[in-house]
Length: 186
Image (cartoon, rainbow, N blue to C red; front, side, top):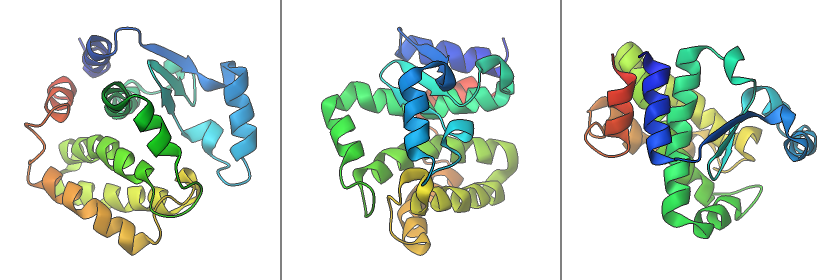
């Protein structure tokens, strides 16, 4: 069983009705892509969306590298668990204060991007975590997430406790990160 198989088994255990689809095959997702094109031209080609048990990928699953797909599924699992726990409050808080300002989306995204930071640490240590956190800060402050956090420095400060927790292995025994790491590691 390879990494993708292990991560997929974990996601299916937590989200039994999991559906993974290519978002270009869904009419309303194509419409969202056209709507977002002026502010996020990369939405259709680079961003994944999760709503409930369905993960809308930027490409067909068999066209994505298996480790990359495992990382995407692990990140989206955090969103799915937050959606399960918080229900309508998750969706409402995710959408509030669009398109600018400090939004609740930043809280939810920081939780999910902790997975990306953990994977970066597994691949390349603390330096890789810091490098990945700079990329994440760019997402937080740019059109990717509709400018959900004002200012790159402020975004870095917001991300800093999570970055440090990942470097210090402080999330390694916290769910769902513990299970994700167990599935990620050989």
